[in-house]
Image (cartoon, rainbow, N blue to C red; front, side, top):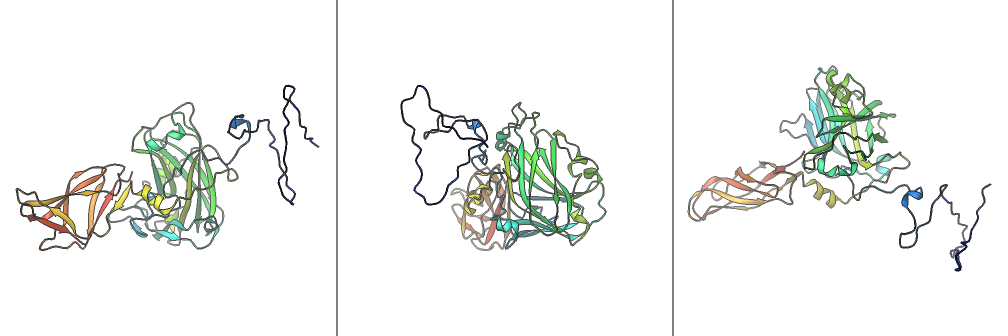
Length: 397
């Protein structure tokens, strides 16, 4: 049995006092099985590497935005492929599919199950509504999340000090089997992957996937796509004929979806995800840092960088210059700066007629705002109003 020994210092003359707490309950202190020096009260006196400290979060804030799937600005249910080109339900989480069936994606409310018990109230869910059991070679079907390249610097990709990555998430499907998460490098067209198993049908399961470090291909320091995450759910031979690469390689499409659940093969099939987190370093389920739940307001503010809407507008003034008639112009200020100059669109029951105008053109668009042009001819200095419609701004990766 190991013994505990207190050794005095030959040069010291002070007295070290160990004081017991005021408690009537037995207390046990377990020392680490490693050599190290305890920290002083001011934090000095030891190197953090000298003690086996676990559970520290490498990043000051979550790398993933809306990982709890709480924000859904566009709506809570959409069909895919969507006739309007929208592939999102919950913000930042994209559904990519081409000629391999029809699906409904929803923001699902959770009321029970392991993910709910872990603190998650929402999930992104995909249901097959029109099956395609025999996809063509070029068909593809995956859920996707993208991170800006300038936000990937903590991984030191493309350097000799490149870091590993851990991706964790809760997942549920009616189908059991092995599926694949592929991580792409948006700047250098490289991929690496890991697999996960759906062990029990219709049951929330927590998955932890380790992705290798990549010393090749540094990211651009810009607002383009850096890491791109693909959860493969189905596909044709172009994307499924290879093997999941556990080390980084030049993109080989056959390896991207080598393992998938083929959600496309039956209208009874579904797949759902929540609690998505990405960490710097290699973790197991036991050592993974806890998921950082941000407030709804914080998540919404982060999502607005990529997508925002005015909501139904109430009497937004559109004014003509004082010295000439013509279509009215008005600067529309965004709620906050966007990732890039967005694509502008409008919808709703815009009022028309006397003193009303409908936005028809955006002749100046920046990351901070856009110039709205009305569809009605106005007299010099005359003010019309854009009323009862909505404006949408999309700057997604």
